[in-house]
Length: 464
Image (cartoon, rainbow, N blue to C red; front, side, top):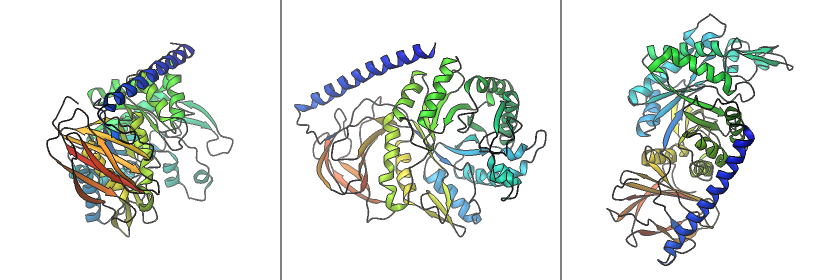
């Protein structure tokens, strides 16, 4: 399909989809108008959407110098008490810094991390992503060297992604040797397999949107599949720098007829450029699940963690089904991370507790669309078995009182609703409480200023 034809069809699909959605919302709301639904009510749809999966990110381990018992504690918190599906780890170019030379010791710290994570959760999956190669360069050369100060931003060793004058300001990218890239990734994956860590997912690249494109990456993946057979991980692409770059990369893949080799469409939001909805729309036109494999802006410090969940809800409402944060572990200065290494001991931050509540109540479940009343920041809902959760974010300085949450078509099996609240004055873990149904399919809430809530309702299981 030519790109112009694709764009016109996409515009048509977007128009039709938009008209259908508008009609659906109008019909949905009109159905309840006679039942006393007010404009400020939160109404949870029964039309279940994407299945949710979540991960932690240990792709770089700058601060993995914890006391052994603290490393085990971190593993337990990260992947056992928080029931994530996968952990992101790095493929380290330092293992083959020069072609034909191997140094597997670069993985010693990572293998220790993976061993502890796997012990904490034997069902854990691993997602391998090519680590930015400048990390290996910084490990190899003195910090004041030309190489360390002016290393190129690329995710493959320089004998695979070849530059003219790589350490010069005037460097020029010359060639991506996709066959060598395939063999390189196969060796790394087989190394992890031998160590007892099967790789479930693999990035074909890590950002680098100006060097590595679909035609060559497709050849790389085909060669990998020939070698790995049933050990081949699910392929994630393009893991772009931004939604906008991801759209451009996929459009080029479609134009060249090379959009069929990856299993999951992913983007980062290192900069919030473009639109998550546009990325999701394009990925769904290819019938791909949609992940964010580096969710930026969802972070602390504690006093900003509540408001910063807005980027998380934006992704989920747009249609993203897989989400991991960016670098879960920081040092004592990194108050925005989920975990901090403070003099060898783990400190757990507010963002972790919010994420844990989301993961444990919706991982493996499905997203349910909700409306956003004008006086709230955003809302979201999920169904997982008999658990229905409704999230409400009020990041404004004003309280919102006596709002009704409606669950049309749901049969509740318990009258008690569990509530978790994160506000300006309560502890990192949040404050649990309970409330009661005020009608057969609704309950009334207060959303205090600068607060986040999770309401958990037990309902009769359904097909959704």
